[in-house]
Structure formats: C-alpha cells, structure tokens
Length: 88
Image 1 (cartoon, helix red, strand yellow):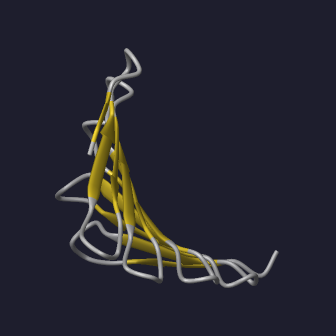
Image 2 (tube, one colour):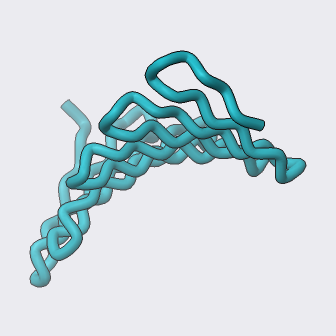
C-alpha cells in the first residue's frame, strides 16, 4: 500500500503515506503529531485535547469539554465555550 512505518527503540513510531501524510507517535507522552501535505500539523494529546497548527501561524485548539480556542497569526485569541459564549 506504499505506507512506511518506522519503529524506534524508545517506543515511538513514524508512519508515512504515499500521499505525504507523516504521523509520529511519541510513546512516552502518548501524543500523536500528524503533518499533512498542505503543512497543517495536528497534535492529539492523551487528555483528548487536539491542536491544529496552520502554515500561516494560526492555531485552533479543541478541548475535551468542547471549548474551542483560536489563536490567529496576528496574536488575537478567541475562545468559544460549550454554552456558546465567545471571548475575544
């Protein structure tokens, strides 16, 4: 299928697909870091927090309680809470 998997002595795993998706699993931190061909990086933490880092420098963070935080590349922060409240 063209996928390449490398397993490291420390338990980390790196998987690369023919499409250019690179997924690295950090065993000690139980964290997955996926890099898409378009430059978007996705971090998945054991707490179920998910971060998306965009090539323009902006970030989108999703928390387990469904709170969402957007950090724009100009430094502006915006948080949206599960009840719909938005803080800027």
